Image (cartoon, rainbow, N blue to C red; front, top):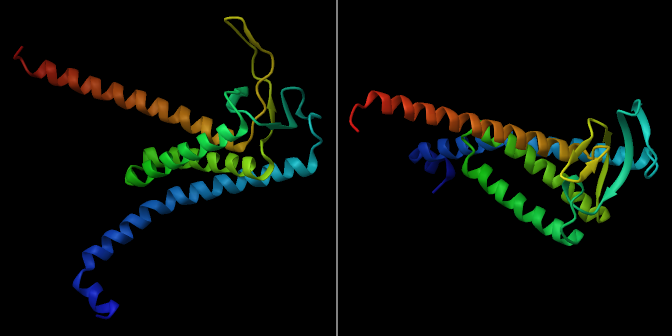
Length: 195
């Protein structure tokens, strides 16, 4: 049967397929853009900065300092670089599946797409140079808690930024939506006089 005839017989199926694809355009665009910006900035850093030699942008507060991180976020080191690579691939897979399954919920898909893009950017580094390329060096505030002291923030990259900002957004969103649901339940309980 020719394709045109089958489409006429089942236009709803074609409509649904197009709708599903349209819902994935935004997250795929975000993922691609995040990876592109992350990798371009890392290439710039590797070509223009000298390893561990800070270049002041806004005094000591904001500098570019090229470093390589074979551990995890915020200076963690729970295992070998291979451990971090495998963990990142597993987490990325879960995030991509979650994006696909929840593609109709833009409020969740957008930050998850940024997280996926950031993860891909750092995975590319681990495959390309065996470590993550970091170069953004900020000095926000010192941390001194429970015997742990941090005098300068960890050096990071664009991928880390989009992942961190998206996680904060998701946590705030989850907290607010959970709080709204609790309020709605309380209002319903007040309306229902039965014990």
